[in-house]
Image 1 (tube, rainbow, N blue to C red):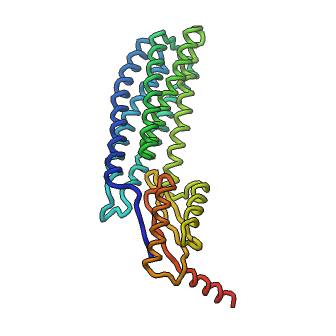
Image 2: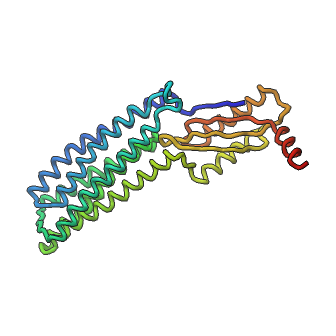
Image 3: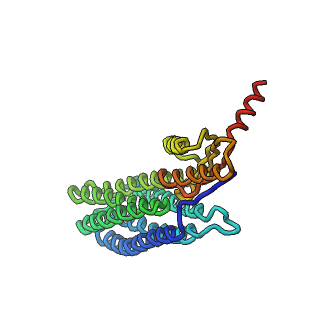
Length: 313
């Protein structure tokens, strides 16, 4: 006997996708402004780090486009070719965001390293300092807002994009420190290039973290042990469940899809067994966070006892 349930309703998925699109479109507007603002102030303020930061913001526009496409496709309902829905496309989009971060960071880092090696001099002005401060404020605010939306709609793609925004905010911190140091003492002009180099290392780390999560989903890696323990405790706590086995949990689009076998009294009717399975489904859906789908198999206890008896002969 098999019974299944899905936690997400079409209307809630639609609302979640709309919220994700709205916050991403806001990011598009902010990034478009910052690209022009930081690039121009970087030129007029003589700051290599600020120009590099403007290129980072340009990469944000690309990732915003990937996020919008991922949200549009990933929220589609299951069809004849995709029986489990399209959530894995969101996971793929997250991986693209991670790769874009790493490529951008390598470009910025190599350029900064060459400038340090060649002792290229940049003497940033106070204009660059003000621009870095403005960028920091806008991107940090956008990060916190995007994280709040991502957590509310439980969307890993939106969360990945939020960290992309945070990487831009932290790059502005490095730029701010580098430009400030160069203004305090002109001989410290190399701090501007070191700031750009530091930014690249941080961006690479964020990109690798995102890719790590993507690989975990694509390889159907089980969630942390505490999640599995909670699922077992809840399942065994349902009235009528004598035992459980073959628990399998994978993650798709940031949500868990699980399958479990429960053991019930073999003398029960099919209707009674189904009632217990439904109780397990609804309890798991209600008490475990981020579950999208539950499939419960019902096995009779007396068959297991007979099997054990035969093995002991």
